[in-house]
Length: 489
Ligand code: ADQ
Image (cartoon, rainbow, N blue to C red):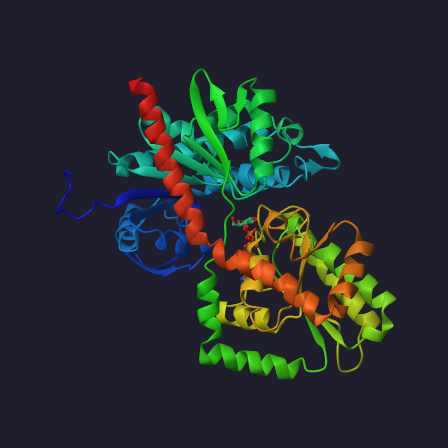
């Protein structure tokens, strides 16, 4: 062939997400220190062969001066990152406002924001305008760095307006969009004042991906019912243009967890925790402190379990690790207080002079500490009211090679579709059902635990983050090839 002898050129990929996978800290007028956050998305894309990826996103800091901006651009370039600069006003209206106060709760079935019982949509339009403006700023940066043949992968609900902005610049750009949250029932989506514009913009992409088949179906229904377009088995068709819609369930880099468990400091930590909790079963919850995670419901279910099972008093401990997020938002502050109050009450009720049943930490744990905790856990409790996928359930399974603990998992997490056969599925709203499942998990015979664990472990170790990214990228490539074939015909 024509390329014989020449090295294969890698496929260039521009990954666009609201946040870059680094945290930036300013050290001086023109100096920055950067820390790469080794999250799932980063390792997923590092694992994709023959792809040369660059990241475009907001660095999470306000940089009003040109000197600071130039220095940050230079520092980030070494990490293959390109910043989008957003000023404080835009961040407030776009990120805190439209993204986190409107889209996030709505997509998780919590409805539109309410104040004194009334939907507060009066400042809706200005927030949506800021959202579009911010998306346009992302598009400008993508456009500046785009070279022919690149593919562009847009991420999440922050950037639903981006596919359209990009196609307006260049209709030949290959654009994919993936949603990390659920896509709600079309009946929920249609309550959104900007429902039409958002759907139309997403449809400008060549490939639209969701974690589960259900979310993809909800999206297609929204397009057929709200936009009156035609849904086909491949996606949505609008005047001869097909937008491919499909499910791409994310996974984790399970080997990264298994490697960590072999490290001496992690082994030491595991021994230490095993000694500390000797004589007691360990139950674990790890969540961002967010209403969608159902943390109060989880703790109330644990209380009900203690109430009904006096024989288990002092023999079981619930560790709830909750990283505070969006701490400047009143609803999140309220949630923190609520959780503290319930924990305090239950510990007062069931604690002794030397021990309490719930250990609640409001903080993030480092990776090694997290791995050690997962490894010593007997029962993990994931009670999300809604969750796109939920990677905590995957991480727990990956670290349970020896212990073969039980996963209690909300049926409203995307992960229920993949780990449902191994986990005990629960409706997190039903406190009695969750309490009964806790009893069942703690009393489960070893052979049943083993069987359930084997199922989940096989899934988590074979459906990895790398596979997810590879599948999406290759499907995005194919989709465009199809589109080109069509235009040639
Ligand atoms: P999240 O809502 O953040 O992600 P999740 O998938 O559980 O939810 O991922 C959380 C990550 O943060 C995990 O890797 C976990 O280890 C880490 N984490 C959580 N609490 C922590 C703590 N206290 N200390 C340290 N680390 C902690 C969104 C969607 C999910 C979807 C993912 C990926 O809401 O549904 O699965 O994106 O698409």
